[in-house]
Image 1 (cartoon, one colour):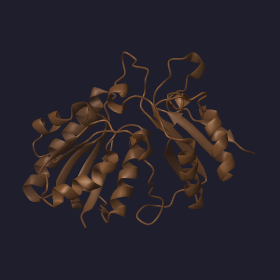
Image 2 (cartoon, one colour; image 1 turned 60 degrees about the vertical axis):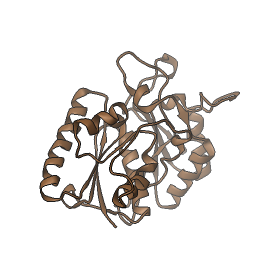
Image 3 (cartoon, one colour; image 1 turned 180 degrees about the horizontal axis):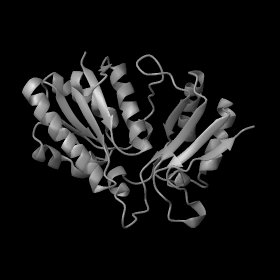
Length: 265
């Protein structure tokens, strides 16, 4: 089976997405390459928060395309993530050596699309469409075997943002707020604890908005309530929550990179 190398730009959400895609590819038989120089597939998981982040990824792909097309023309090149979502087909129009563009609600389709490309069913693929239930597809982890065993892990509990702040692209690249069910999150956390994880960070664009958009919900779960539920279900000592955006409501403000730590002791 082919080998894959994923380079990640941007936030913890992107890191988590890359890990999940890598785990899904490993489950399909792909090997994880130690570097882009030996990979059969090179994927750039991109960021759109600032223009500089986009330019870094674009310049990197230009260099990769020039190098691989000269020496390894069969290497598959792809963009994933926020810039892929916002630019879509434009990326292939600009860089025709790119084979795959995967949006933020299609990460779980990556393995199938790579199979299509390798087997000649499709030459190039762009998929940035919305998909119902995509928030629940980022669940696989690389904790051992093909990756270094870790006592910490990220768990995605929600995707998207409904704030539409003037300066922010997140609602357009990540879509509207969509929360996973608490039962689904608890099951993932239990599995992680059974594999030796001691600390879990709950991720979302705005974790303090978790559960607020559920249709017909009488009372949404708060982020703090979800922390308590996970700690009770898993007997975990430490869990964290963190968001990549600020909520506009002062009562629910949660800062980037500032983890609210809840200790059960």
